[in-house]
Image 1: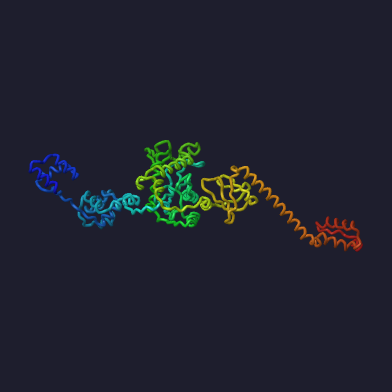
Image 2 (image 1 turned 180 degrees about the vertical axis):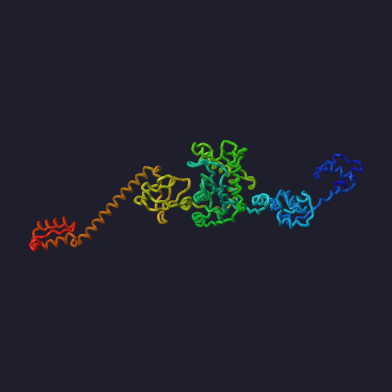
Length: 520
């Protein structure tokens, strides 16, 4: 070694000092004592350490490692038991396939066996047998995609947040968030929160990411491609139709491969680490010996039942939504990102001069609404606790219509009949005086129109049915009576005969005429 040779020369010339030794030790990242020992050995290279005994793993050793879940000590005990002829370890017999594979093998100590496992097996392989798939992924190396330019590629995902929130009715729950992240700038373009994920939450997040509203957010553009997982909400018909209508390619990733959309997964983890972990009700926080969360929130079933009836406990979901909105603004505009050269997502978005494809909010309105079916009732269209009315639904009680709505926005719904837009309905409690008067005027106009139609139909029926009265039962009876009483009978006699005939014919009795009496 050149360092030892140089020190030996200094020593022979009488110029060697402790400072020289310390300088060499710091350069080689060893202790000064080791350098002095090398000089004392009288050689130009350090004394070689005694070679450690080596061992090469066999297929049986690897199978035993998997069988004993990565426990090297258990593998060594089982191996020693087989070689000693006992065949039993920790009170249980060694499996036959291991006993057969180890037959005639040489003896090795535990440290040598552990060193062989650490040398010949990768950390991912060892973690897979100890922890499982999560351990293997934590040790794996992945390819990193080149960053796209702004607004070209989205990554979308669902995640159940580890925090308890109190909803208006029912016990506290952990809500779900839908997030959309821009691949090039890591900007959180759109998000929505719901008790359970559904198509409406996805459409809400998509509308936020698509619509450009300068007063609210500088983002908003139509992408070329979207990466989604195998969630059923992303594969729903309305989502597929929206993406197809905008010529956006939907790339559904293989199942159980979250690294394929790592940017949105990283944002979801950041939400948990920087926001949720600091709020009451965080279910991933530390717990005491009884399993209760530290802090003001207890997530035990008994405590949640009490909170449901008393209105205490976790924060309300409306308050959590406000905090989440503030966090999103902070993340996009103030938090520097390491992968963006310590720029914020907003700075990266504005510095990218790539052209964007944008569609006006008016054209996207009806496209980005969730849909369901409802029956028009006497109070209008009942939906999410409100009765929606419009002049156009007047007279359509009992009819099935399709409604489209924006989740978390109960100000109005769009009503469709047989695929065509019928009207925009508003809750009865939110009608303006003008809307109320328009509804009542439509009601009066509809009443008058139907009255005119009924009167017209009655006149038409009278004109059509009057010629048929000659064949009526009354006319037939009058002819029969007139034949019995003679052709020259007076009108009064005919009326009297008809009254007598009608009063008894209902019982099947026919009174005798004068002629009949004479004959009898």
